Every structure is written in structure tokens, then in C-alpha cells.
Length: 247
Image (tube, rainbow, N blue to C red; front, side, top):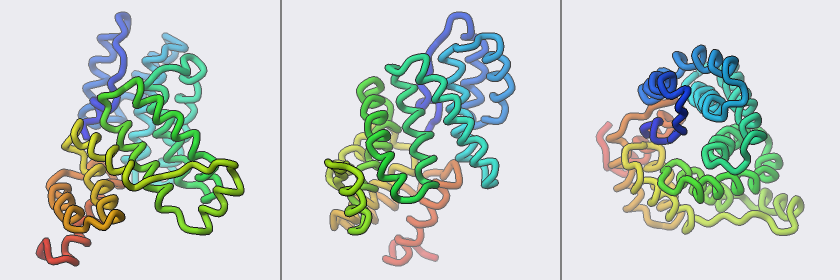
């Protein structure tokens, strides 16, 4: 996915020239290059929402890029720190909701299943607010698709735990997930991750031919980071197992 289209960050008259260079580096995945200038801007213009959101986004993307577990955690913690700061400044901003959902969602992945279930409604709130305010942002739909997929895919024990935690547990649906993933691809057809999740959703719905077809399209795209590389390898494995790709 073209990450600049994910950011859709705001223009600032005072900082526009600085942001032009920074956003170019973000689009070209030179995330390391933006941290120093963004920190400098954050010192010069404290509480500037444009700067703080970019800092959270850059650290989140660096956490996705690195293979070092300690650095992954470091950048994720920084992403959370900055987006928590941003939400105190403007809790109605679409970009704040989006990057909060992304950072918090990744943080939840590293926690026990109980914590993941407890955090599900927080992710839903921020993701839905992001969709309302950023209706053409493909990644917002991707996040909600994953939200529905993961909840629909919970086992019996986890479902029982959800009923203990919530009077009305969050409910996921593969059918609803399908709609979100299809909309995400419609808005951004170049991101491999959505093809993976859409194929997995087809599989859950018993549409295995559609799974293979969408995986064949997905593997034509470049995996930008370690997460997508894992998706790519899984798609290749499934296609080979079903005779749709030579070893």
C-alpha cells in the first residue's frame, strides 16, 4: 500500500515546506530519515497535531519494518506515546482515531487473549470513527475487516471468556469482514495484505476457489514489511498445495 495515502496528513501553512520533505520520505519508506526533523519540529512547535501524528505514524511504520524485537517494541511504544498525546489535543480527529487503532491494535497482538478481548471495543470505536471521518482511506476498512475476522474466528473458550468480560460481547462476522476488505481493495488495489485477508475470509465462507484466485492476484504485489512477507509466504504455500503455483 502507498503509505502516503494511508497518512493523508494535514497541511500546515507554517510547516508545509518541512512536511513536503518529510511526507516524501514517508511515501518512499525512508522512515528513519523523518524522526530527527520531526523531533526538531516537535520541539519548535509543541502540541502541533500535524507533527505529533506524523511522529506516531513514523514510529508505527518503523515497528513494522524492523526485524529486531526490541526495536519493534521501542517504536510501538513511541507510536502509542505520541498518539496518546495527540488524542488529548483533539479526540475528534480522523487521523488520530486511525493511528490510535493501528498502534493499539498492534500492541494488543502481543498481549494474552483476555487483554485482546477487553481491547476489542476500543479498537472498534476508533476504527469506526476513522471510517466516518476518512471514508476514502483504504486502511481504515482493512482494520475493521480484520476486527470482524478475528472476532468471528475466536474459539469456544475465547468466546466464553468474552461473555464473562462483557454483558454484550463484541461480535465479529466473516460476511461483514468480506465487505470491508472488498472496499479496501477497491480504494487501494496495490496492498498485498488486503488480498491475504480477503482470501482468508473467502476460505472461512467456503469459497475456496475465490481464495485461490485472490491469492494469485495478491502474490503479484510486493510485500513491504515482515508482516506482509509472512502473508506472501502463506499465500504461496496454499497455492502450491492446491496445484496453482509451481515449486
